[in-house]
Length: 459
Length: 106
Image (tube, rainbow over all chains, first blue to last red):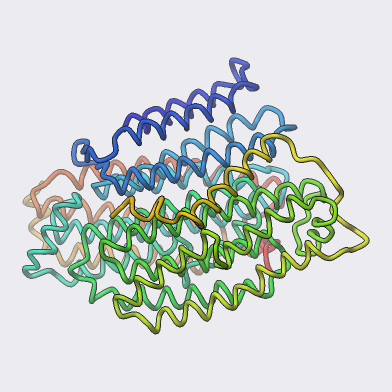
């Protein structure tokens, strides 16, 4: 809880940076603040503190919060590189990032549906603004409006679901709802409708099919740093909330909604991977890749149970580590190629910037799930758990989709290692980019070679 | 007041809210003007408020009424952000018809 307060204050500090003229200092302050927030969370490990039945910091909440904070730490390091030439408005953007992050932390630690709703909104509202933060750019405007309308629409479904669940159980408290479901005495039909509406709203938020259509447009139109934030922090927070809500409350009713989640998982995998095949923009391809990874995570949700939490945690960490590298290289390349983002833009990167090309290759291979990188172990644990619980056919579908995904991940690598007239010029990345790449690549390799680092955490 | 609300069966409130909610959903799906879509979203949220208040009265529990305040506040914040975005877009393309927002496509 202390770290949530700390982060809110950090956001306010960042908002006033423009007024009191300490703009140059703000990024170091933010980085120190986030590191302190991680420290405060780690300090709470195992204590299971509850705050007025609104937020409950068990190990699950702390692990996911620390993951979100670490990812944001790396994104702010990337900001140090990406926004190094920008002027005034950047501190406002940082404040919005931090407020969104605070919402994400609430989504991992809620123990009351009110908190879930507020967390999702605190996460989303700053993001609507961030998506439109390149004001003169029509694509950014369009992304912001689409994200806003779709987000508000999804909020409607979430609230209707919450209202129906409340109407049946008479409480917003997760423990109360869990007790109500467990007792299972004359549950009215509209309670099940409520669960389905909650699923719809959360599928919207994690950008899973058939509610994924907004994601590629929004990811492509938003500024690249915001896209990085959306495809890592927002996705992980939404999954953490999804898993927490359903694991806590509705597991005894799994037989009723399992079919919906299974169908959504298969559809998400197929649509995400097949559509990614014929994309021209790498940014948009990464958006579809994010959608397909949401499909893999949905399989973990179908399988559920205590083992699913550690699998989802490991998978999200591996996915975030690889995505961060990919987006960092994309940022650097776009900056040196007048903001273009097609596959062809990457031509000649290996010749002129071999290190960056190597980083990108590692990221792509990790996303595709090639051993010994983190992405492989994420998939391995996921598939092993699913097979153990008797979902062999689902695993076969997922493996088939992993094979499809190899095509578009390798396409990036092939483009980097081929030459063209219009190549990426040689440039020296600044210290922030180097630091960020080192940290996320390190995380990627560490998780690949010592998966037990995170696997054992949540039991 | 509670007696008045409870004088009508709960199902009627459920039906009314569901109908209002569906009108809102249809509005979002079929209207093309961004402001009308925003109004439809508001209609969805208000149908939920109605439902929550009804449930609250039937359960004899004030929690849902407090939740309604939260929804109103968040809706106000959303409208503030949404209208600002629309002003931004209107300045750039001089229309709020969402069919003109078609730059992002494969």
